[in-house]
Length: 243
Ligand code: ADP
Ligand code: MG
Image (tube, rainbow, N blue to C red; front, side, top):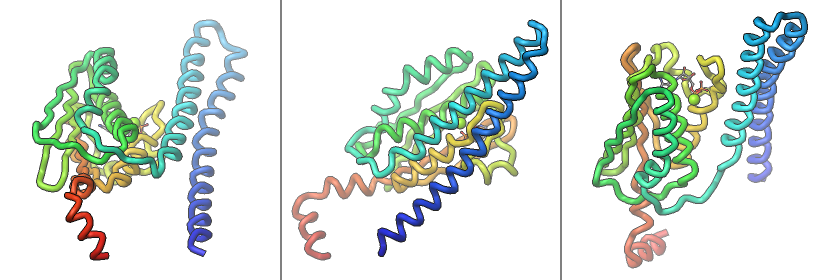
């Protein structure tokens, strides 16, 4: 009974997502179709402009499919004992290359007291990458993106800080909605994916922003799961017998 209920629930979620993704992909397809029709009658000079729009819309449709797949996959994947800083270091070359191309820079402020944790490294990589890309996209040349970690009593905190355009207050409540985007080529799925990754790690994500100054995304990842995994065997046994 219970499984049936879950399946039905899942099916309706898949149905809802399918409806929105169909809508979101039809939009760029309609634009591409319209512009291809227009291009038949245009001079070579004008063609260049239309060509760029067609390519952008195709990239957008492709981006939606990629992000949507990430959102649909990765579920219930195993977590492993790993270090958040190792994941950040692995991403560094990619982030630095991206920042370089934009004339921006990246600063790392990694706390020394951060211990190993139970994480899904693939998902955490995606989380950091999405937040950093958003940060870079919000900044002009010379912008600085900071990745900072802190250790508090029960959690590790991860901050992604940019010196970009900021987020208007009226938009802040909608950021994590699937398909909410203010970008021409955006998919609006990046932060929805970030939220689902953080939730799968029993963490929280919050945003603080000032228009014209920049934005801070703060993620808390609890250490509790890790603490349980290193319980001495005697306490593990007593915890089990108490059940
Ligand atoms: P996308 O990047 O494809 O637009 P996201 O889900 O990653 O989708 O982000 C949704 C929206 O949130 C963006 O379009 C942008 O308006 C806003 N946003 C996210 N991160 C930032 C940031 N660091 N600075 C300013 N705006 C941001
Ligand atoms: Mg994004």
